[in-house]
Length: 437
Image (cartoon, rainbow, N blue to C red; front, side, top):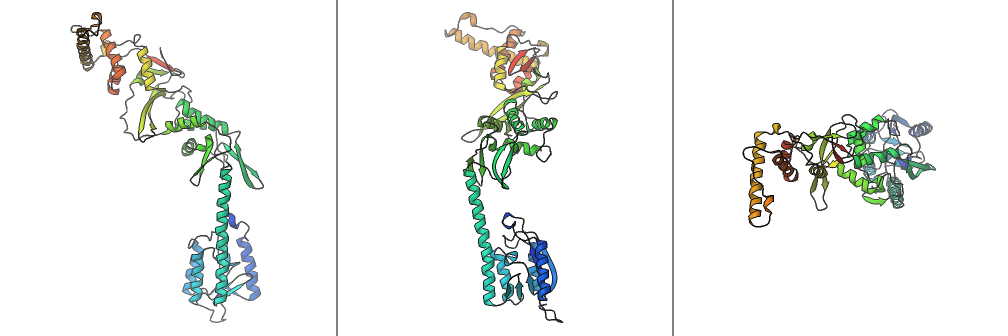
């Protein structure tokens, strides 16, 4: 349907569009566009068959659903003209402009009327339409370049564009973000988050429990989610650098933590591939937390090496079952073993709990040790009194303790777990120091 058969008038669709993007904040609102164009239609006695409106950017081709349906209806003959405020309401890209011109070439779109101009199906007016829409595209492209250039300049000055991360606030001047300052209420809490993970070995879930307990919320009054806690702990902005559009910059904002603390946090946050229930932590059963009296647990941490691969470390710390805010710091398994060895003379072993397999291992160890020491004596590398013999048929406490010392120094996790069961002596961990109860 090109024209109304009874009146001979073109059948117009009034199309109004407004984008929420920054480059169109000064454009006339949709309601204002419709009001002005209805008055124009009344004045010029135009036949408006339908009014269509949408809030969508016209930068990308074929991305506007209402505009696409308008083009489809023109192809079907539903409309023969478009009434709109200005050419840039129809197109700011070459693809949509080409679709409009093609419809005019096919004699399906007979007229595009704006507030101040008319474009009919003739070469000069189509050429002018293409120039005006191309000019709108040029303005878009130039604004995009200018925005990118301005953002890059701001980054080079040391100020990260956009909304400030948790713990910071944007300082506004003339409705523009000028710089970033510390949020006096939330900034110190973020600093504590980093210290708790780096120095006390707290996990993300432990941090969340602590934040919920103290009533910490975002600027919107919401509790901090676990995913945002991890995102915060992994953000280098907090020690003074930031990445924008793939480039790294040094910020002028005041850091909330140091690079050293940040790196320790990243090592704590590495989660390696694991097989559940395969890890053995043999020393949990002999230790208690010296701060809250709770049990001690352990976990593996993996540090990424400079030339690929990972190094594994095992840390023991309070399980925080009694007090999840317990401040007892973690201790490495290597340091824990060294301290156990230093207490070897005070450790008591319950010989009644020695299983047959452990007894046989102790005898085998001492038989081998005696043979080695005897050979050392024969070759002259050992004094005679240092020679050791196996007691006939029975195990002495000294033999069991000697075997314990060997296992602490060179045993496997499974062997250590076996021998820990027979130890009667209990220890507490306090400030990374192992003490006998």
